[in-house]
Image 1 (tube, rainbow, N blue to C red):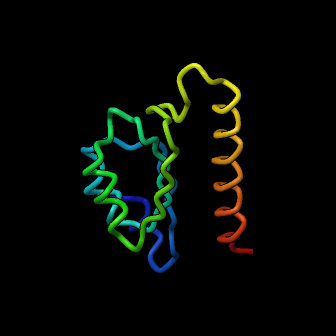
Image 2: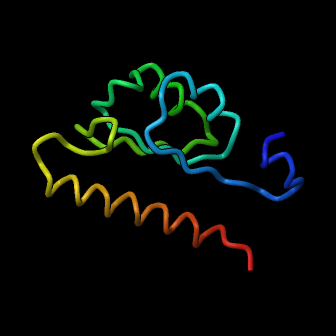
Image 3: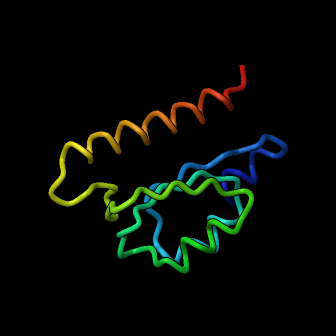
Length: 99
């Protein structure tokens, strides 16, 4: 049984880093923020478009980033990407904390 199903009425948000095509059908069933790169060879443009077409998905596409969310041969920009993604995740967690 999926953990989300065990939580009954509690709203569970998911964070998905660099999914692959075969996971898209499951991802769209949940409220989720998805991080991917526009040069990710493991997630096709069609799959990114599929994710973008769902209102329950927040799709963050990092321009020129590969599957690891890094930009080849640009470590400074890769570090900035890491900071950006960390900030986005932190905001999502803070906004959805139940006290």
